[in-house]
Image 1 (spheres, rainbow, N blue to C red):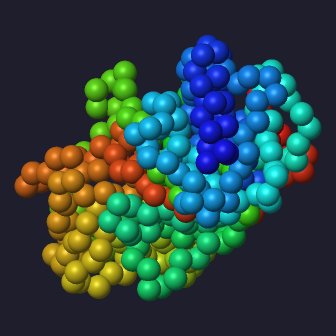
Image 2: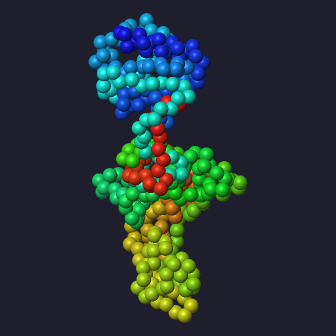
Image 3: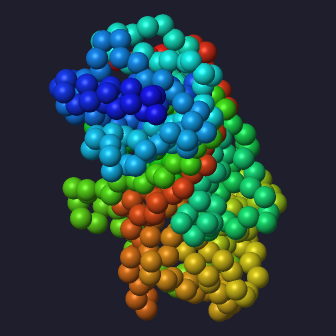
Length: 365
């Protein structure tokens, strides 16, 4: 009871002093000091008296010494659950341990490595849609995990080097607008903000969103596409066009995959042209924009796409949402890099680059 009485007296001094400061909960030491960003709260009209001490109790001491809550001062009633949770989580410091709480005094203390804006860290992440389907990941995703249609496996599995950035820096006008970044680029932009304050080895689940675009032209981020596509079975194109589309010099038998719905092979090459024969099997097919069905009609293949309003789609690295569908066409809105979805990302910091390493002192300010 004596310890609680001293705590009550200290809180009373805080209430009378009109100091606007911060308190840190030190989970590793079981003491109170400056709060970390993730637990930060502000106490208004509070002063920490010079040389005021708060002794840390063990959990069993709390259970034995707590009086009736209604007998405590209002401020103490508000703070007590916080102190109890700190003591419980900390597992209690050794008997006799004290933590000095002072205004404008910063005694030396242990340091821990925390990521700050401008630092570079090696991270791993796995992001899911609210449905639980995997949307993106730095590492190979197990076959038994459900995956969204917007998920694309990275060519190189493993940690990703990422620069930490503040929210203000992320909105600099010279940066590419959110809606014009690829899906993965925007994930990394958002996680660059989320890892600030993390340390090596720490794992955290971050909820990230992307901002909607405000286009200068109303239809800037809208794409209107045909629900029925017609593809000739044999395609003849100029050689320079083929090289531009495929970024390679044509060769007989070379695979042609520029259009994933209608893959083919180079059948012949002339001085000016390249002839491509399309190879598809009539029947059902999963397209970028939803389930489809391919049928033959003379010299052409016909693809009917079952586009559905509200569905997430992915095309050329961009993610959008189908906003309108009629008998002949459908419209995809690419105005939000995540298609308006919220992603839940499990993030692990593997390493903070030594050259940019910063420290945070566990002291009171």
